[in-house]
Image 1 (cartoon, rainbow, N blue to C red):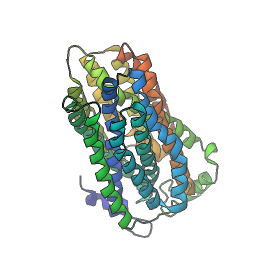
Image 2: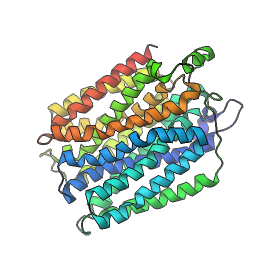
Image 3: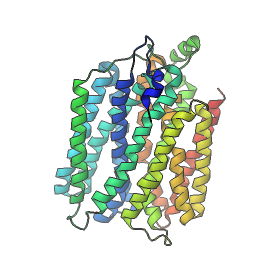
Image 4: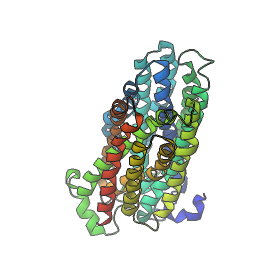
Length: 414
């Protein structure tokens, strides 16, 4: 993929070239994708190491995604008051602190200690997502906003691939050689070191502070955009519908990822180990997720974002029905395939949600990021429904994808 071959989409209103800042921002997308996907490995690991039920292990996602509910609005306020760079630095600092927090948590060796470290880590990710998503949108031409954020999210998908791969090898692979949860130290302490290096880079590099109204990625119709941006967010129908869609999308994605390993190892005919199921998640599901993000960025040039979103969500609704009805090889294949169609959903819903909001973009962004709290709800509910038959728990993402399909097709008509 050559960013320079399509560098015109990174041009500002006055001819500024935002390609380098965009490349830096993509590093953040990669890092939080890696951290998010490690949760899917932690979920099964803690079921074994701390003797938790599926519903109890859902507290991992509840702590992580609960941080979004607590910190999204403060993150938006700080970004609005002090700018994009300040929000990024605060986010990276909390990210590193949470990652290094796993070291004392291993010594304490209680579930609560690990949840606290995750809460701090994901508080940092809340800042990064609140800032980086709208920043990627304004770093270039307005008409390519949806394509640009999908391109940035492609690097996020690469992180989602490497998380289960590295996590499965370092955590499941070292469980026998280490005592208790000591296998968690290497991946999380290593992640903390990487985040500190990125923090130092952002501290010394100058980033352009672009006001949304200067390079508004919302509407080519200036009068229409001005009318939209003058209304309170609660009266913006597109934005309100997008908030609900984003909440349900994160719930669906988190639920699918949390119990992928459980679903796969419960298929008797495959006889997979936990490490093999984790590798299947990384090399199968997450690889398709990355392919979808990359292809979605180019499809956005030819297909309306709402139409593409509706089609992908409808396909995933049907795939969830197959997963529920067929807990076998076909179900596992469908589970992997659903990642391909999930891939474009978050960035597409985000771009559609902030469309036409002008100076309200940062505030709207913080609210959209707050909806990531949906990930705190689905895993525990799915774990309870699927306590004895994991396939039944996937009725939750089925309902979520159904609404997202409605939102996408409805938006395409506007």
